[in-house]
Image (cartoon, rainbow, N blue to C red; front, side, top):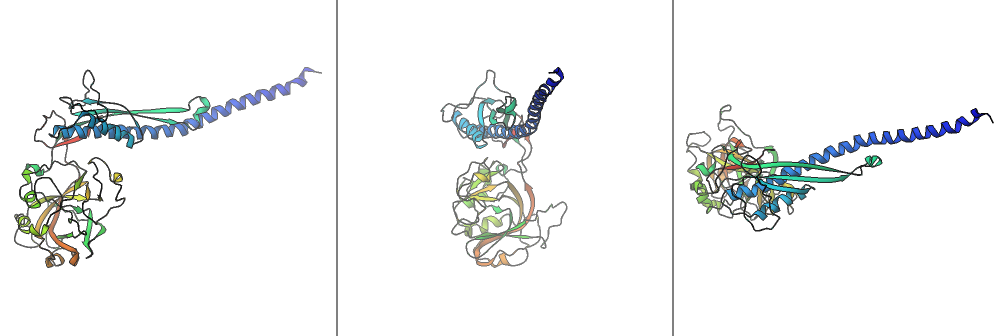
Length: 396
């Protein structure tokens, strides 16, 4: 047979090889796009885990600096739990100084439950988190699994607060919902969708037309949002704020305080003038926590509302609650009516009406400030027990 007749099978074999190689290359390129995008997302999630672990550990360091004794093991539990909550593995964690620089030699954070102390001079935590994940298509070129690694460093710094209560500012141990609410007369709040009006006294004129009525609703049996700041009864908290430890992180979970608000009208009206509906110098600005969620669980301050198990939605009923507070508001007090079934709470000046017999009282005034964070945090050494307001920031 002529040799030319033997060329076709050879050519077909070559084409099959070329097609096979091309398919592998094509799948590899598609895999690079798909798995590359997945790897980018995994890296971002791993970075979030490292950030959370560093901040969670530094929260314990912050408490230790504030004078609340904490163990090395408590820091270990915090960093491990934070990494696990973000579906990542904690590869390592170590203490840093106030600038975020690790000790030399390194001082690792202890394992969860260990009883040692936090090292002297510790003012931050560096955490390294990892995530291993399977690939979708890159296995054809030998990459069946990839690994994302991220690190983060958080430190405790000094906070410049806008008139912090611990420096003598007036504070109300009661929390308001983020949105305007009224009392429905059946031991519940009717929580609306509209936020409370926030006014800037440098731009807007305060008058009886924009005066707001904030109801204090019975919450069956409940404590109408009154809070436990750990410094005595409600009256002492209002009149002697300098005796309270009020350096709360923002956001924070604050606890309910049982008490009788009907006995507080005299103490509250010390901060108000005597001309209803008219802003006066005697109407002082009180700082009040604004909440956006309630929970029966005692959730740690740094954890989000999704960590609440017993109340999966924002509730306004019940006692022994914990309130999630992302903001503090400056409230210029025009008058306090907390004697019980006060008719002023449903009358002008001010709006909206409190809602009749569901209210155990109300406060009238103007929202003139909103503090969404304590203020800028400055880096610097802090002596344990030093009476300063502190905050946590990521430095890496």
